[in-house]
Image (tube, rainbow, N blue to C red; front, side, top):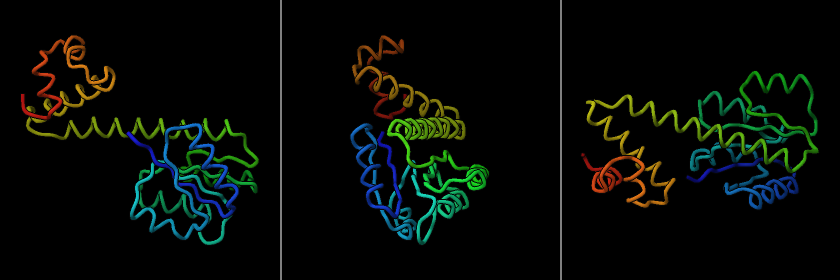
Length: 186
C-alpha cells in the first residue's frame, strides 16, 4: 500500500530538504507546497496520510492546519516543524492532537524516525478500521467471507502469492485459497 505525505513550508529550501530526505530514505510519496492557502484544494483532490507543516507561515500557519484537519475529522496525522518553538505552542499543539512537534534545526534521522512512526500509526489505524468494518457485515456468511479474503490477502503478501505455500500455511485447499483471493463465496 502506498503512503502519501504532504509538506508545507514557506521556505523553498526546507521543502527541497524534506522532499530529498523522504524520497531517498523511504518508499513514501511526498508532495510539497510553499503556499499553505493551497491546502484546502489539495485535501479536496488528494488523500494524505501525513502532513508536515511549518509553524510560522503566511496564510495558514501550522496551528491553523492542525485545527482544520482535526475539526474536519480528517485522517491525516500532522507533524509541526518550527524554528520558533516555545513551550506554550508545543503544549497547544499537543492539546489539539499533533502527532509530533519538531524544532529546527533537526537531524535527518529525527525526521525519518518521526515520519516512520506516523506512517506505522496510520497502518495500524487502517487495520483496525478494516477489522471493525468486518464486524459490521451481516449476515455472518458475508462477514466470514470478508475475513477469509483479508486473511488470504495477508498470507499472499507474506508468501508472494504462492498458492501452494498459502494452502500449506492456512490448512485450506488450493482451490479454497484461490476462491477466497478472488473474493467469491466459499
